[in-house]
Amino acid sequence: MYQPINAVVIMGVAGSGKSAVARALEVRSGARLIEGDAFHPDRNIQKMSTGQPLTDKDRASWLRALEKRLQQAHAAGEHPILTCSALKRSYREGLRHAIPALGFAYLELAPEAARERMARRRGHFMPVSLLDSQFADLEPPVDEPLTLVLDATESVEALAKAIHQWWQQHAPA
Image 1 (cartoon, rainbow, N blue to C red):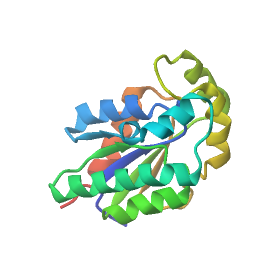
Image 2 (image 1 turned 120 degrees about the horizontal axis):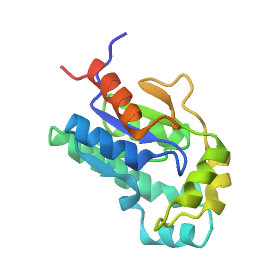
Image 3 (image 1 turned 180 degrees about the vertical axis):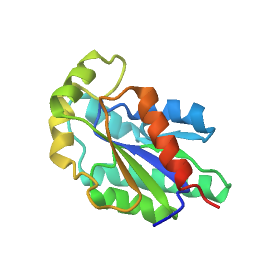
Image 4 (image 1 turned 180 degrees about the horizontal axis):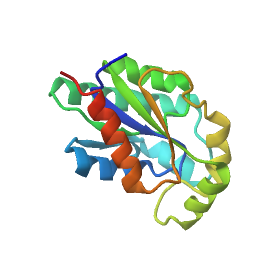
């Protein structure tokens, strides 16, 4: 059944390639990128930087900020791309309530591959040691509406192309 998609969340655990795929999708689609990490309060970044996993309480204000930013973009007539781990169904439901017809592109990645990618990345506040907590919190978006599941080991361009095609198939009228 056809359902339009007004915005897309690129979701997955740390190291799944959310930011790279979102930037490639931004170029391909012309949509506006909202980098979810930029909305973390300083206390969350400090906590993660010292190897402490975030709790639901820690993530609550961050998720509210993302919901507000999505609402602002939607009100301005934009169709944004948001990067957000969106690990739990309750987080995704909050985002879905922020704007109508929100799609999720889940970049699925095995723990070993995520660990390898995170070990290679430089300059990010989240250490590899927190990856286990991400997988512990992860509730894959099985049987959720407007969700595309992709193998995150595919190339960034292939992933961006697949998401773009899916989004175009569900383009708002």
